[in-house]
Length: 278
Length: 361
Image (cartoon, rainbow over all chains, first blue to last red; front, side, top):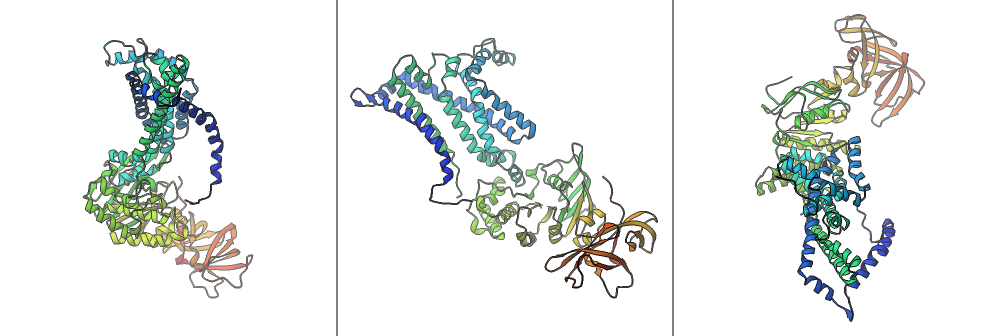
């Protein structure tokens, strides 16, 4: 039922606590941060941005951030989508077990998980041993302190945030649709591209947005898995505030990260928008 | 039952889920142009049989032939069997016209032919003006018509309908049933309807296959199924009937004489003396306090317990000796009969039926 009404829906008031909370703990400090990045000794200036963007090192930092976030999202998407399909198709105890297996790791702290990955990614770790045993590698190599290692570790931590939104969309899709498409002559590939994928898009999009935003702004994981030589906007922000005590640089990098994340999520939302009835 | 002219020929179809034997080696065939119903209670195997014919499920044993070709192992998308699903399964991200065009698009028909075909089938189901609307806003009846148009647009050899009216308002159903039958006759397509609703099956079908526990108990024209049920199950599932159990005294000239708690009753049938039989009679054949009963009639005494007025007719609930419920259908409300009164019920020997005990599981 689409009751269109110009009055304020009383149910909308239920969002008020969340809005108030986010205003105080997020929007307000964020505004302070943004204002600081524009402040100079003699009034507002964009000098912080021009000097930041004028440095080639900082462009590499932006590149690092986006590349790591992109590949982390991609790995999560490729592993998460099939998992979500399996989760949505499963029933009863199997489904409960799968859900627990997906959600329980969230209760293990990021630091603990990341230290575990340090062990796994060592030269004599499980991953290296596996790759040598299967013949992919000729001799053991160090995965720790590489971008590949960082992406693997980050994807492991963020995977549930990909699976759960996709699952929540998939479980609402009528399972008969695939059968209906088959009776109309659609091959398995056509069923996937014309039915399954378009209907899963909202879930794929929210999962990817969440993982991308988390991966673009992660701080602990890169610090432990790749170290100081590799900087992202988030680690640079941390360094600016904690080590260099340069509030203006920190505010600038934080704002750049915020703008980039919003831009990428908005543009991709537009790109995958549902195509209305023609 | 296998006929050389059958469009659909299922033979020896068996399906077991765990310890549950859902289909027990079914033979089922449908002639070209025929409208056949699979009628039975839930769990009788009718939907399983439909899914096997559509290729959505594989039988453990048995074969399916369509139009002379063996299709047992052909995948669904290459079978050319249309299905209208119980909840219609319309594609929610597509418009009405795009839903109908879907099959033609995936089968790579030319765009101008797709346009023409979609228009033709939307007109056939009277949904031409809804073509560009999303399917979400449609009523249940309209959704069903989109599902029918979508299934017919790809010109399937056979159309399967899985409980297509169960999601609709009871009042709408009869009109929709007659509408759908008209549409399908216009297209001239062979159809199999799966339903648990006996009225639906009686209204729509050329033949009805009554299913019970994975077997077809009777496969015959609607009038035969109603008037000459082959088993107690068919008798009970299609229409009402009074059932009176007893023992055979004599059996001669096609007439069996049965000793029952209600007295001696006669009905057509041939049984061994002493065997257990159930005598049955449909409610519309029983007369109440008939002053001049016909000569070859059964006559029993029973007490009226309730009168249910149903508009064009009334149901009179009687109870006879041995707590035997007897339902009588009368076209007029009885004037001088009140609940608690005893009446004489009569019916001709020839109007009764007789059955051996129901086969056990």
